[in-house]
Image (tube, rainbow, N blue to C red; front, top):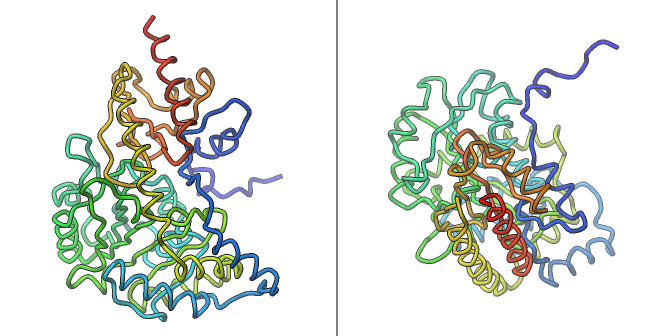
Length: 388
């Protein structure tokens, strides 16, 4: 049979994440890999999903999302993010990842450039490549606290051929939270080079110590230059519901809604009902969860920095520790593979997040404290045995 698999699919790099997801629940395995919250949705969220099923709310919704959920998103964005928008400028998606893909589909043509932090969320670069765009990698350096600078952006951009800059704060995998000063500099850069900023803010609630999340879409003059993307997966422990949302200028939302009809038609009706309950219901569980994650964060950072050959910065947000292993492992993939097979601990090799992630591994503390300790104990034992 003649070859009918597309070249774009064959050119996508292999990913270890699928393997991690498949083995993370294997007997005897401790997973510090996938970024999936270990808490379940609050009872009122699950009750809303159950009620939607009981009432047979199982039909298609508007491609843009239910009016009630979009109205709730508008109120949330104004109250919590200082972003002024309308329900007509909100699109409900099947998770934030679909929102990213729809945004890129609506904004880039083949050969056009997209500025991407390096390292960054592993879906960004393949999404650009599958659309025949040009990923323009902007190196984030551990020595600079993984912050973006004008100089870094300017080194990577192809003027006149670049449309979009993807921004992720709090960041995956680094845990970086961009300061207001950095965001203002990025905003000025976007204006100078006439770029659209795609702001991925799915970890907005997971900030620690003196860090503060600021939506770049709330800065003066940025309302018409930013698409803000968010999700219910992290904040409300709803990854399996696959529901997210985005807001931005009307022309972009209209384009994405048109594309949405041909990708998945709409987000799931039951998931939208649960998401509405999440926004309308009590929020008091969120600070408690964040405080609990902060304790795990501190313990993981402390333990990692006592292990031979490893070091890490204290992340300001998200729920990952990006561990520098370059002293003992030249390449992150075989090191992660050894941890998987010899220590029964699943971690994500840094190369998954771009060349800038080589020499690192990502550990997630979005898992039970006892499992974190067990996984760290195994890692330490593995490293000590390597020394002897």
